Image (cartoon, rainbow, N blue to C red; front, side, top):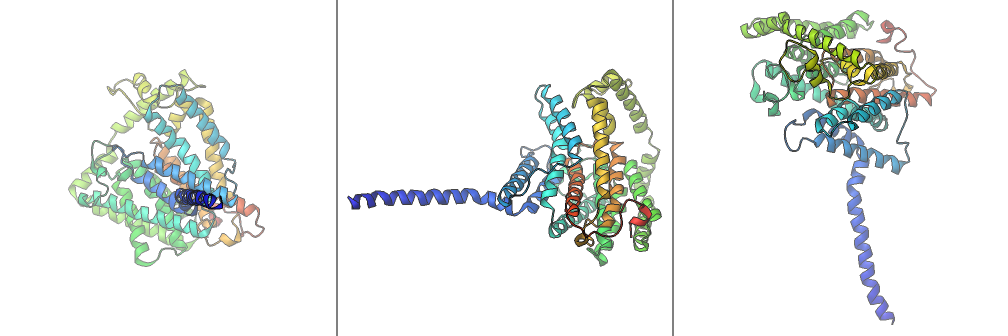
Length: 454
């Protein structure tokens, strides 16, 4: 009897061992994701930057985002970390997301509409909260900073290569496909839109300047990177991008008491001026720049579109027209143009028309809460880190770059939105750390901007 029991127990033990190993093998991917949240986060941002818009595997950015969320959630469960942290900015985010999703639910299913909702609301708002959970240590913040510098170098190289005609060096190749995106005649980068490329260059350039002042990048490498930014900005051939870059650099020159910062900004401005003079020495480039400066067609078009959009708002000021309904309806409210669909080219106008007064109020509230994040105190342990007082003082400029360009284009770009809200999430998490830390760096960065950058 004992022999038969032993014979029966052996297969059961083997089956149990096999089951245990199967569970271990199945949990290994989740374990790997939970132990490398920074890698997942940066991989998701990379997928949003380099995703091809017209291939069967175009949902790679969605896959990367889901893996990021699963990895952070798994880590939170294992470490007993609070997964959902409600911020003041969370409430307008929830309001805008509810308005957008409710609007889409009332319409027939359309994949493009859901992608727009994800790019403008769901993904950036989620990254805001995920960033606060992932980037809580300085070593992780430095990895993010290194990623930002690499992306800046790539975007600058791509823009300058396009400007000088070295198109064989541009990667990925879909950037050169005239049937995809907009502004195929400009340096538009993988975002396939010159304004979006310019906003990214401007934001990343400010972070590179911040890294240089903290001596994170030095020597020839820093000089080449910072000098390439104004040239890449010039290559976008977009007036709004030029204006926002000039204003951001001018504010730093005029409002900063840091001599080193002023000298660097003056040097960047001089490189931009020299690059402009060199560009004007070539007939084709001079002709292109002159045409862009004197081109009135886009201004006339925008005036007509804005007037039509305002008329749409007056018809439905409270409820709005719904997500992605504006292009087709706007064509009916604008005369003189034969296109079946017209776009507002203004983020604030689109929100006002799509979601009414209440939606715009929520968006303004959200932007105000993001601005307030720069007023938080800096823990003493982070005084020399990425989110130091200098970064807090630069935060209004970063937001200003986003706001200015949002007035001339609809910010439907996942990478741009995700990158900005990631920075905001880092600041929100730092505010929580500072609340429980009695030792802070001296000063309140935004109390007096002139005294803040030092």
